[in-house]
Image (cartoon, rainbow, N blue to C red; front, top):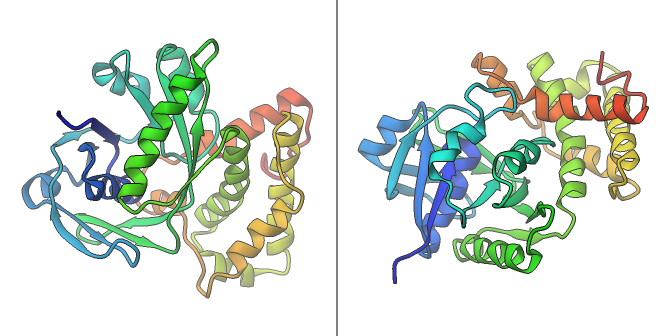
Length: 295
């Protein structure tokens, strides 16, 4: 019997780590869509440096395709990029930051299962752009973004299969029935740290030291996103803001960078729509004041 085939769209820090985890599982054929590192990966194989998974050189995937970065406002859109490879039984998995990215996928593929994952993994590309380094922690909170009128049992089985692949490769997965609440908790984090590190070009350590107003600003940003999420009827545990700020302040100096900061430095498009845009639009729609994140 042939193995299931899995396609990863994007081979940057996070995509590279999860492509490697799936490859290490031995349970599926892994195909990836790459962009700037396409030629190196095709000719030399892929490298992963990780305290959890070890160091591997020359990992080769079944196929490597070339594509651009997926963004809500990108032209062509993610749906347009994916359409040629989507069959009626294909599950689409989001390993992206932000909120709202599932909506256009449900509109484009109303009969397909959409699996959404909150990524709590530190990953960055290696200096030679021939692989990735995993740092800090590795973990996913993952669940089905159930489609209207869909067969939930069937969708749960597809999720279970994917989680089995990831865990066989050593990945850490926490399955949830309320993935949107989990996504909004993550965007509370992203809306603060991604935007502040990107706008100041400082890691979190130097940012905290820059002003007595630095931490109060973080609290204001996070609490505004918490208020929007609760107005949407989502579950945000009490103390979430304090927990997320402590997770960051506990990191030894110089603290954390962010993917948005790296994008700004490299003059690449940023994920501003899914990290900032959706919370702002939802705040306006629901009548929740968001003065800090609109400044």
